Length: 383
Image (tube, rainbow, N blue to C red):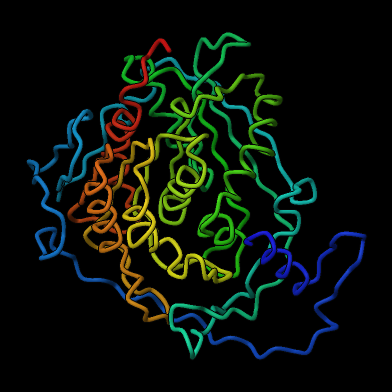
């Protein structure tokens, strides 16, 4: 059903479809411009001991959770750079290979979309959880993929790997230390930028916030074969040796990839995950977008073989748009995620960070080594 909706979107914005037919947006009646997106309010710091939040263990300031412990933790307010990042040049460094992908070469995202600058959308009068966007149009994308290959890799050796959203390469530097210290297996890391823009009506939102397996299929069928070719590596097919990682919508994307394709991914690392209602186009099967993960999908499904890391900041996002559907509080969404995962018996670790905003850089530099080590627990270093 999602592919059908995407085809309808392509027809509306003027791209080539089957049979070589062109449909031009200029031939359609002019649509009124959507109102400008309002500025995001600055949320007050939330208290991790708020009624309804999960019970969590408060750690000494500056400490991080044990890498082998499930459950809920509170850190901060001080966030120091982890030793592994502060001394990153002290370890044998892997090689980074780059290559470019273009929308013209993609069968899954062949057109790309973008929303007009300075516009957002309007809530549907009959359904405040549905956002109507009239200013989205076709826009080709181009992205540079970065591939980290660990020091000493022997060509032909099958490797576990991690895929990161938004082209995040911070993991490359951390892996040098963790692999050298044998805290994680030697692995390949693949940094994939989005197709551009953010949220509803843009390619990044379409890829990351859509509740389906489509983006995971894009990675599996179009990105990974090029990684093997361009970087001369062999990637494992074992889902226990595959991880996803991302922040914000990249974080929800990381979990969505594994949720819809657990036969491909078992390990997930998210920070400030956008487990809120940001899916577009609207889908009646998941009317709350990624909010449905903790509201219906996880509670109403058998536990999947996933190991999940979650982090959220006390000043994370809160209702940053015109929708007032009670499904746009990032802190509450992550608290709900922890509660839903615990109820189903998942292996998960949830970190509530004091003195931290959305995708907070200082928190990331403090937590990333421990988070990676947690996510890869149970995968033998020699496997």
